[in-house]
Length: 148
Image (tube, rainbow, N blue to C red):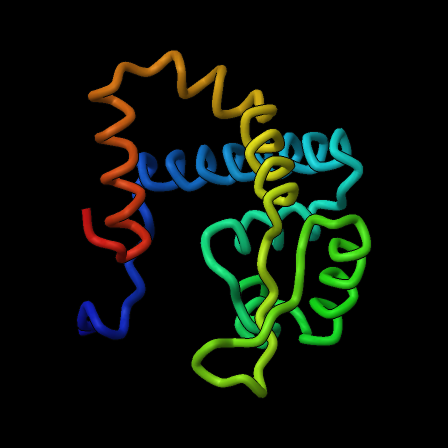
């Protein structure tokens, strides 16, 4: 007789529906994020990198890990953003041999404008009450293992 460890449990219909809905939300978010980035003359990758750098300056290796790409790709993206005055390279105060990429004030302004231009955040989420948004946030955090 099979034990629960050897027999994979089939997801129930509700779980399958939730997974499908999450996929639809992710697809819509990516589509609208790419459109918003293009409206700021950025690629999606440039916009994501800029958003990360608005949180904190990061070394190229860490940026590559967060974006799940090769460090050489990150260097090219940073070069293009730097040429537009949106990002700058600076020495890491903890290790002067390491260069950090950091958003400039103009880069932070562009990133804020990009986030504000996302219809996705304004329309469907605005239709939820604050309590519903808090419950959704907490459920998503638990799903991602970030606590709640």
